[in-house]
Length: 206
Image (tube, rainbow, N blue to C red; front, top):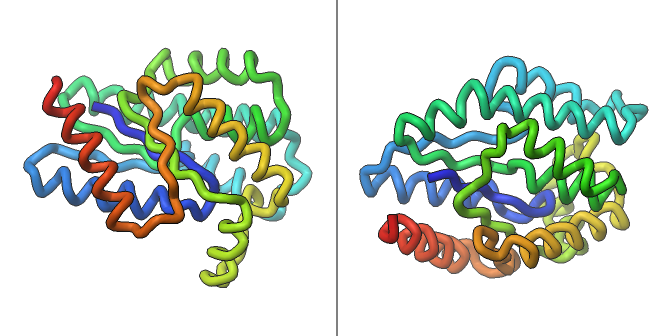
């Protein structure tokens, strides 16, 4: 099974992914947890380029192709071999991030984005995608609480994130068979229990 976690920056997706990883490991499943961009030597180097605040001149199209390059390396080198070996793979972001961030957020042609997504993944799609939904104002509140530095992607502005959120809502509506749009402002444990219930039902139906 291939499970992905999506949402705006600071939405809590990484926290929920890690909680699910531990729960599934404790149940005896063989789990591989990955993040995007990253997960391979090449993909991690691309990640450094993408998030470096010194690269503010990067064009939207270059950003899109770099994310896609990192993803295709991860799919071919790690994700597909793991799935073929019967390992359950959880990934913190996948191609829905590209559709939401580069398609809706940056304004790139959505059909072009979807086409390249299919090429970059060799047609691989998640079995389940959890999208943690938070208002854009919540990003600012949570960042203020963490007091951490923002990377290049996180410095894109409120209007950009509003478009990205709209994109995630559109994705969830268009692909409701695999996407679950979850209110991300609830308590961590409450969200985790909902996610776990969905995954357990999916596993029991296989």
